[in-house]
Image (cartoon, rainbow, N blue to C red; front, side):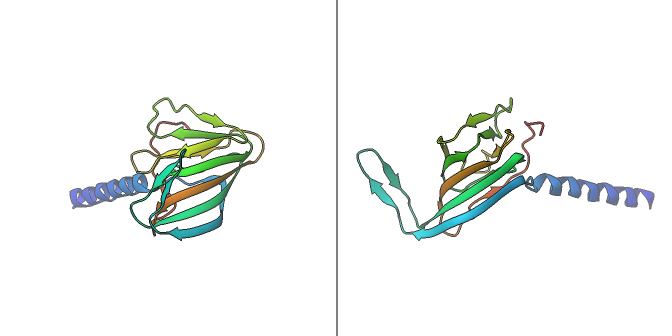
Length: 159
């Protein structure tokens, strides 16, 4: 009987560990305001300087992210590309596949292309400054897909 209870307790503990690993990380001091969303058919844009093509219908979002001093987005990825503009403060991005956890800083007026479009390439946005960080982002995702997918901590950063 003791072995049965002990084995059951171990199995329950193992399930808790697996469940905790599968959960995404929680943002802190981070908020998102959706400014607009539009459903587009196949996007086909071609100019001398730009080529943009989607295979299927897409949702195009514009959002404003506000990050308090010391705040962060939590680890996540997007099912499509994001074009990010830093409006206020300095944004520091961390890649989940960087074993050194080296942050990449972007100041006001800087544009960043976020092409982390699958669970194999998660990232985190952090405000390491003392003031408020604001970004405005345009995201193109497959129609009906979530705009953001939370991901577990990859374990490469100590925060």
